[in-house]
Length: 90
Image (tube, rainbow, N blue to C red; front, side, top):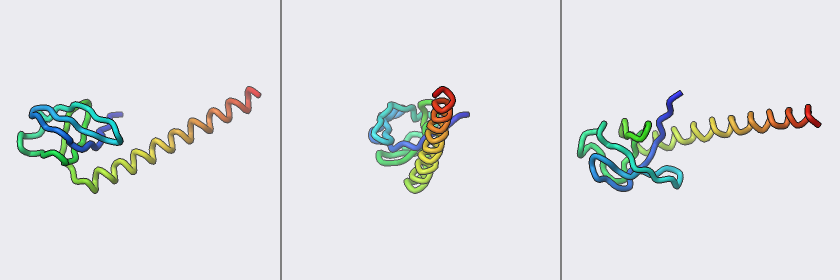
C-alpha cells in the first residue's frame, strides 16, 4: 500500500523544499508541481519524497485525523494480540 501524507511547506528552494508534519521536517522534491504553484505555508501531499498535489489546510487536517485513527486501531490490535499471546504463554 502506498501512502501520501500531508505536509506544510516551510521553505522553498525550487525544485526542492522543506516540509513539516507533526514535528518532523523533510527535504522534498517539488518538481511534480510547477514553479510558483506553491508558497511557504501551503500544504501538499508528499509521496516517496515528492510533493504530488497542493491541498488546503482543512483537507490536510482531515487526512491526519484519518491517519491517526488508522494508527490507533493498528496499535490497539497489536496490543490485543500481545495480550492473547501472553495469556497463552502464561
